[in-house]
Amino acid sequence: MVEKSDRSPDHHVERRGGRVAVTVGDEELLLSREDAAELRDSLDDALTAREAFVNTVGVHRADGSYVVERRGADSAGNRKVFDSFDALARLCQRLPAEFTADDLSTTGLTAGRRHMVLWHLVEHPEFDVSLANRQPLTAEKTATEVVEP
Image 1 (cartoon, helix red, strand yellow):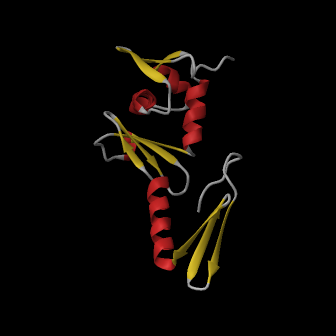
Image 2 (tube, rainbow, N blue to C red):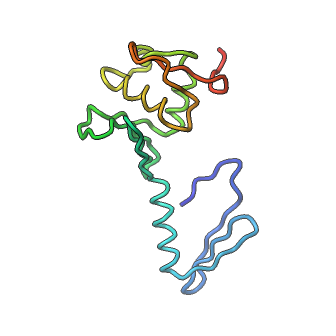
């Protein structure tokens, strides 16, 4: 139910009669089945969150994939599906310190998806990327986001 990383505390879930015991680290929470189901639904909502920005929307899907969409658009041509949010972060890391939408062509993005993904990198607070110029659409990384070759 909860994805583990090397920094995550150990967790364990077990059924105890009509209750569910959830243990994270040294803390244990004993829940009714109804409360456990509500917690599961809340976690699912948090893990499949939809974040709207000015020009784009980011969607964390239940299967772990991450979708960048043009805000207000409803066709598949206005979205790009990444295997995960980390895949988008790796793409960003591979880009030069200053990049244009054309630089995203080398990553396999075509047409308007290049501009949409560039805008998303600028808008999403997880990325230290800012808009450098509107014509041509250009973004620049802050010093903390730049990865030296």
